[in-house]
Amino acid sequence: MRYMLLMVRDDAEWEALSDSERDYESILRWWMGVAERGVLRDGGELQPARTATTIRWEGGKPLTMDGPFMEAKEAIGGYGVIEAEDLDAAIAIARTWPARGHKVEIRPIVPR
Image 1: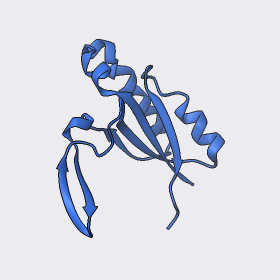
Image 2: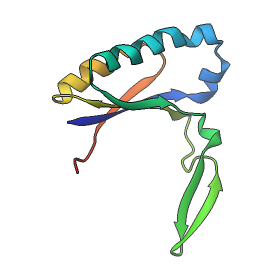
Image 3: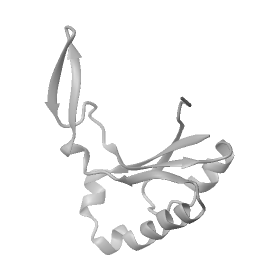
Image 4: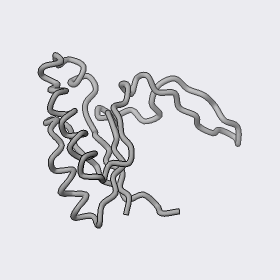
């Protein structure tokens, strides 16, 4: 089964960290380790939520807005798509995410 791992962070706190505090070296090792296990299907870091463009519908017509639709302190900072036997296996992978201060949300992808 495929799972989406959503790396959730506080963008303001993340941006306030230096590169060494962000520990990209550990994060890169994590991505490489998951890829070497053969379960990584896709993934990447996202630009801060303030760079988002949102399309919403009003009166049946699409409106384009700058920024995220939802106002929240936390935002999705990155994502990974993995192939795992079951939720327990996906949890085991997500628990190894090295960026402390982040949360990892695990969501099953609807099979097509």
